[in-house]
Length: 445
Image (cartoon, rainbow, N blue to C red; front, side):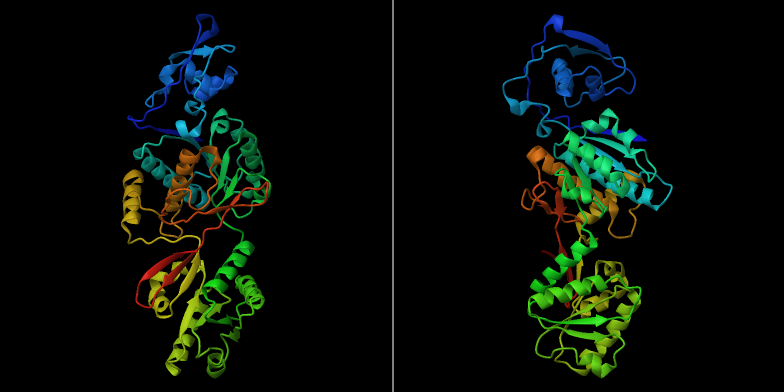
């Protein structure tokens, strides 16, 4: 399945490109149904830029190729571009950006429905960019788990893309990564954490870090931010917990920095549990479980500690999963000065979030899903960031911090180069701070 949408602004101005075409150096072509400018150029062995230069009308921002149109096909070396190379229509900064989407876009299961919402966020960003004077051509392919990705990549429209968002499934990564490397296409991997291609393909941009990498970077930032605190690491005795890897990494980081910390258990008797806390320094508490029941028990034990000793000051450090619990447990989050490390955060009370939610309802006649992260907002942030970057810097855009003013609605992005020949990894990081005065701060680290 392919959907094609074009975004143009009537007042957009394209630089004039001088051409010289002799009567003996052209042939005529009658446009057939579903033909594209790129496809016609490819069929005749010429570039899209050459075809546009031979047909000046194609340079108008409102031009639409129609069935039955007769267009000129240049032959040989008859098309002579202007001397100013900056006016070349092959420069992504001087023409519509061609954006590809290769994700499961269907209603058969949760993967498809989630990616449809993400795709809709991409489209909302394109609409916003249109109002800013940027044009985007959007090509979208449904690539479910069993998709024949090779047949999709064989389509001429795929090779014309400047940027592709996808895939969702790791088994499609090899072919798509190699394809983007071959064609010089930026590949944005929006969700998958399994992308070994990142190490050797400079066209790959991976948004999410693998858990082991994230544990290490979170531990380092924890040690820097809470350097004046006394860490208390609590064993929740939960065999199903997946957070032991983080607390292990954290202990290694604290040991390396010679930072003293206490170990205790959620099962410890009250006196023994309370003895782990300092009365001289503020304490920062870390559980080795993200389980909601363990967290509830923890709140009870912490209340007992501060009730028994007013000199004990407690801050908690949690996990991104706890954002799902914020509505029901927000009072305790504020009471214990909770910090949540997170790669995303949505403040739904902000006008920007509310306006996007309203646009989503108006455009797609339904509300965004309520689970976090809000995938439509994720898509919106991703498209706005990368398309603005391409428009400003062209193919040299590397996604690094400070390239342009970027205020995310939900998802901060700050990419770093991975090795001499590798791609780019998003290293943006936030603490969501539920302050004791009832406010919520986001701290970009």
